[in-house]
Length: 440
Image (cartoon, rainbow, N blue to C red):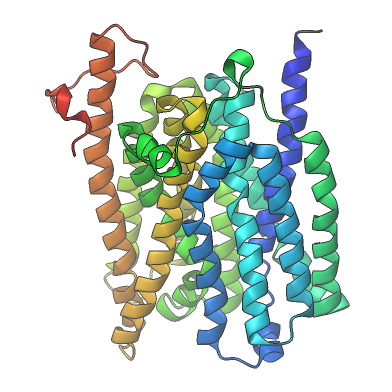
């Protein structure tokens, strides 16, 4: 029984941290059902309202590398606790905001808190669980966090209807602030190897060290091309694309959009268990998913006459949703190719991939849509969504490049008699010149 205590303690620590992540996802999506009220409250138009989303996603993506550095230096417990305080403070400010500028400031604070959570949890999982269990715990964490997105739909809409704007956001903000006491007391960082804290290298050197690892660059591009489609559709363009581009009734479109969350909840544990048990297959899973993703876009955008049937649209959106679970492969790559003291920085670099791609995708679709506006029968959305296909092709091509280079690094380490994260089978398409594993 005594041997079970460390593992039981790890699960308690993880549970407290995951609840904080669930709250972060809830706050991230809380504007979705409050958009109509926000238009009236701040007296702005749709373009100004979209700035809330762009600002929040931009802060999230921009903060991933600093977050990794903070986690490596101060530990997950402190960073998660500060994040929860920022989330609660941002939502309280949003509750009382009565001007557009104050609303933007509140969402910026909230976005900052949101940005600090996920990398901190992954570092916590890496330090408290074995490498074999890491993939499953990480993907289950992501799936449970997606439930926060569910809470930010129907339950939040009912609260806004019954309690009103100020009371609803004050309540959820106050509850979040109170939860900081839980994370501060329950969450604990693992002791550093050897019992002594490692001296931190200069900030830029930490980033260079992490980025020089081929596995980190592979993780960045893997995250880039698997996550952004569901992110761009969930945050902004999914509903208008379904209604205006694919001719789906508004009531049905809401159900189809929910598949982007359901797919993450269902797919997370399945993908996590698979890549945990068969680590040699994880990049093949990524490549297979990218092919299916591209085929789904091809079906939607090249449907010969009229609009695709709703079953085809729903299947495609479910495929896009699985990008979230598949993107967890990137975090497993970080865990395998980087030492623990560098895991936070490397995770931040990888996590920036998908979220920067999401922000870029949201922006590019909007720009193309402006240029293509006025085309008949939803053709403007068909053209605009080609921007997401372009990002997919870019990310997939870079993923293939760095997959080969990371494999070359593994084979070179194996030849030197060193331990390797995964035993791989050499193929004819593998790089033969091992010195080119990390080019300038």
